[in-house]
Length: 95
Image (cartoon, rainbow, N blue to C red; front, side, top):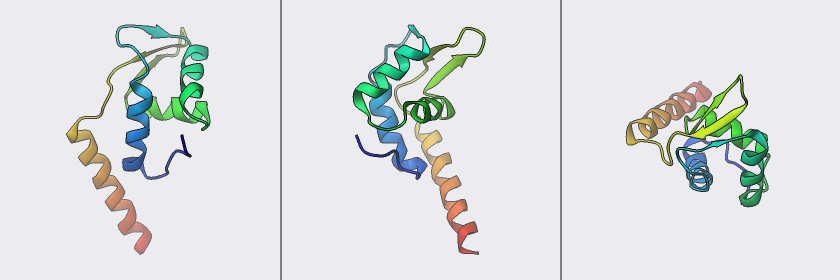
């Protein structure tokens, strides 16, 4: 897999593909998460893991260091929100 795009909209397809490799109703330790990510992506597994959490594909328990899958795909509402933020950022950069 290629480098994770900076554009959050483009990033979603890659994150969705990675999320598909995990099972719902199961917890994973950090090593397991990293190994699954590394098996399908050459990108930085720490960055991808953080992005999975940032976009709410995953949740992490800070006390136990365990992870679990929340969803395989963002809702349309979440995608629209990302698109709106991206558009606002583009407008700011034009100024």
